[in-house]
Amino acid sequence: MKFNIWKDYPKMPLPDVLSFIVDNRGKTVPTTENGHILIATNCVRNENLYPSYEKIRFLSEETYQTWFRAHPLPGDILFVCKGTPGRCCLVPDPLDFCIAQDMVALRANQDIIYNYFLLAVLRSREIQLQITNTSVGDVIPHFKKSFFDRIMIPVPPLDIQKIIGNYYMAFSNKIEINKKINENLVA
Image 1 (cartoon, helix red, strand yellow):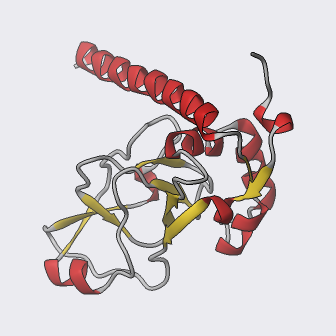
Image 2 (cartoon, rainbow, N blue to C red; image 1 turned 60 degrees about the horizontal axis):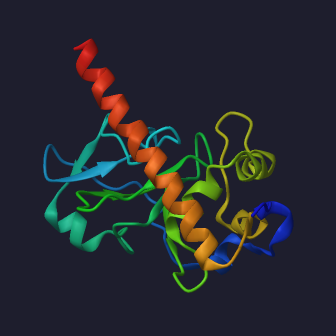
C-alpha cells in the first residue's frame, strides 16, 4: 500500500488535534539551589527523543506547587516557542522535571491523533517549514501561541497513525541507544 499523508488525508489545525496545552509562559519563575528540576529550551532538540539535562535550574516545593498553571504528563510533546521555534521532544515516563516559559507541552487528543505520530509529523520537514515561515522576531525568533492554528496536521486513520508512530519510535529509540554506545566509546 502506497500513500502520502500530506496529500491523501485531511488536515486539521494543530489545536484541533490536542486535548490540552500546558502553557506556563509569562513571568519568570523564581529558582533555588536545589529541588524540582526546571528545564529550558536548550534541553529540547529534534535530534533527541527526550529532553537533555543541560544548564538546568531548580525550584522549591512551594514554587512547584503554586506557581504553575499546569504540568506536563508523560507522553506529552514539548514544543519550543522561543529561540529555535518548533524543536520538540517527548516527555518521558517517569517525569522528573517541569517547564516554565518559552515552551509548551502539547497533549494529543487520543481519539483523533496518536502522540508518537504527532511527534513525527511535528518534526517533519513540512511542519518545520511551516513553523519557520510563521515565526516572528529578528533577534530572537519566536512562535506565538496564536500561530498554532496555522500548523496543519495530516490526520490519517488511527491505525495508520499507530503504524507510522510506532516505526518512528522504534527508529528513534535505536538512535538513542546508538548515541549512548558512541558516548561510552569516546569516554
